[in-house]
Image (cartoon, rainbow over all chains, first blue to last red; front, side, top):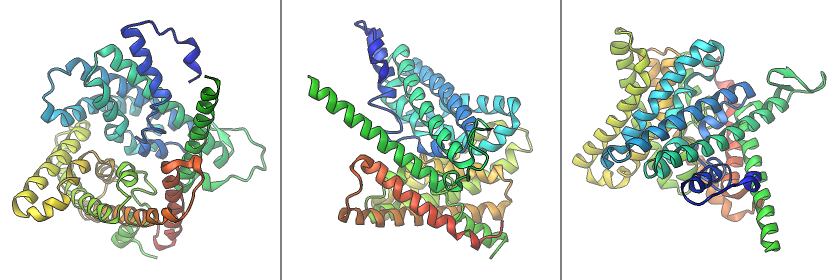
Length: 218
Length: 194
């Protein structure tokens, strides 16, 4: 939302693409507002490393599948669209999983099946259904990138909170005093739900404060 | 304290609950937990589809993909199996029991895109479960998910009587409830030998 100031929204397609991108991090944020894709969001947020890898996988998959669906949008028969989308999504995921296994077997083993579960992440299906299946590639890509950025920043910040409070580390490096009593609760699943609930509360409160300020001015 | 298959079953229901500990199938867990009958119907559909697909996926994995060294097709095959199973079940139920179809029919397409179904098959294959283990794990996970969504819909009925902080909003409130439930389910870990 801070990017609003640098918006050079010219008329036509460029402005439209910008709008689609901006919505992904602001008013149509995939996790806060549309409440989608929470599964992988919480499972990979015990450490920042894992969250960053997951965010990268999500971004690549979203961009590739949005582009593919957008290019094929006039040829996909409506009755078989869901299964077509699933196949389109799973192709980059398979490639990325193989790459991850080559690049870092340790992270691949820790993420385990959650890499494969990107296929059924509702953010991707949601963006495809709502945008890529209807709009030209440029807009679909901008929209997908916005959603990926919104998702990525969220899971990385959740992971930062959980790793810092839970272990006293950040990116695997100690950054709190030695005698910090690690709060195991934050690392447990129950902690994940609570941190997400509080983050949603902050986001909503902030948005409420911002919009009332805007309303007061105009 | 129990180990073996019983332990696996109990762990799948309580300590490794598919919704509260693995974070799978949370979208319907949040959106369909407003009314108890709907939650129960969804839970049963999920359990049924989960069991059938996990067994089929295990067979395909062991008899087809691994012998012919095509493990990289795992995701594609699993997804096609889920889609096929939901379609076939829908057609069968519609043909043989329109009454049940009226109650459950709408849920089967929703189940198809439920990450808990794919998740159970993937976890069973990732942990190298045998046939019986896969079956027990799938049934247990289904029951666990049903128990979780039933408790959640029961709790949500009582939200009418209380006023959670406004900033939490409906989603934040349900997340807080889920956090407390996860805490309670996690405390049953004494039941299971690791």
